[in-house]
Length: 233
Length: 59
Image (cartoon, rainbow over all chains, first blue to last red; front, side, top):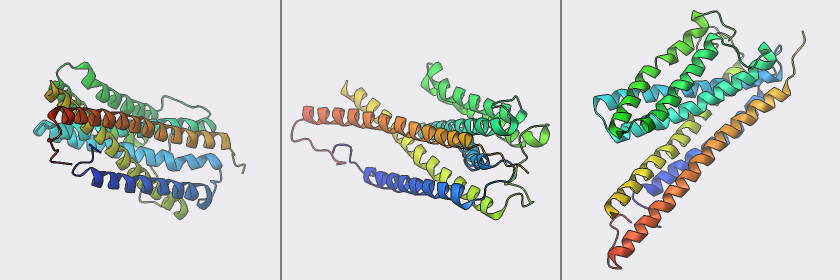
């Protein structure tokens, strides 16, 4: 096979390990969510959406933080690898923010009586999603690729300001959304729910790593293709 | 105290999670497969053009 080059076998091995770990982890997460954790007294079964909602939100924060760091590094010393890294994590962040928004809306309907309300937490999260959608589209709008990467890095840095705003919105404004219950000193969750939510965060992080590796590989192959086409002329 | 049972919403939330994750994964794997095919075809084409004596140092 022509593509079997240095490192490609190792890459596939890591991808396979991450893929299998994600799959097993997901099955474990389903067992914990549906069998291990108790049904919440007031909200009933629908409260179990909480585990995926929170794990997705955590991964969105993590992804956008990595975009922020890579964007700073890119502006200090530009390199295509840093841009690729930032773009890949931005895409993963958008996927997880989409899951957060949709799962939150579905959870909100039976609990709040509506899928959507212009609540500070929901609105700032939607804004976060829009910022990074713009981030991903920006390169296409700017003719010069290098300038496009630079603009995207600036958006990646400024856009991250919304992450702490999203997180603190439930404390700063009157909101329907509950206060943070994981990163608090008080034990707001029973142990079984606490373990399950931590487990889901870990599994979703492994999933994010697996997906981001695929995304990075796509960009690398695109560059290889471009090189091959350029040298073929 | 009455417990709300909303299995429809629970099912919908998990269904959408799987659709988004697998949809995105499918989108990535298709792109990867297409790119791999194109890169392989171009490399083979170049190797054929270079002649049978040409060897790839990386393979």
